[in-house]
Length: 280
Image (cartoon, rainbow, N blue to C red; front, side, top):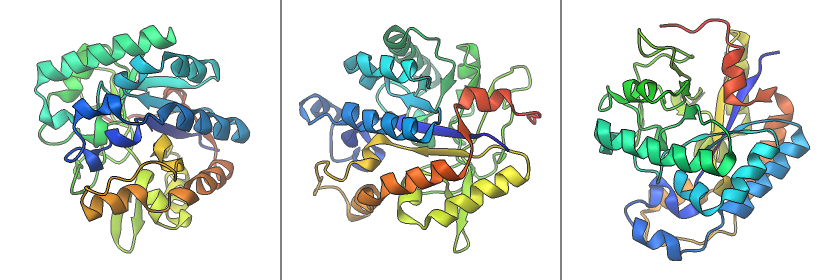
């Protein structure tokens, strides 16, 4: 049975892309922080399901909640980088990206006492505007990235990218593990996050089974704020953003528990260790 990659993008409710035009970074420190209790709830869910996962974590969060980072590692999970403060990579240049990586990694390693070898770009923001991004990751010593969504989307996407694990550089062992895609009513969507909340669970289940039938691991992701229906409401956000962010939050935990029980899961680093062939 193929082990699939279970991943969590650790960011607080106010740090998401849906609110980036209405909540300034300068406001973050005075808003209600709910990421620690929500991530603890995720840890409980994983303990109940007997699974291990990778937590792609913002350096900003790790800086303020180092004890949470230690609890994640002590529970047997992997901590990886999600950048410093959720700035999309295509808004940076190579050296700004390098500095963002270094700042986040130093904070994560200080908090966890563990080496950080994996990275996921905020909002899957590796695309045609960032042809240098994988090179910078390789030069900084990362073993893998899970930063590509191989589809067209209004906020992200690299539709021509491979759908399975691949090596984006000919002279490096760096592996890119794209997020798995699902299909609903003729449209491709990512297997996780808001689409998992909004669509029938069977959509993601079919995508995972299809990947496994080919001998490949599926890559699933979600956020701790997605199991928090009591979080504050941002009424000033656009309607589409509010729909994406708040819809079916109350149903998410139950759907996650069922999905975890239905498939085999593990940390991203260990899933990649088990991948027999990675294309160039």
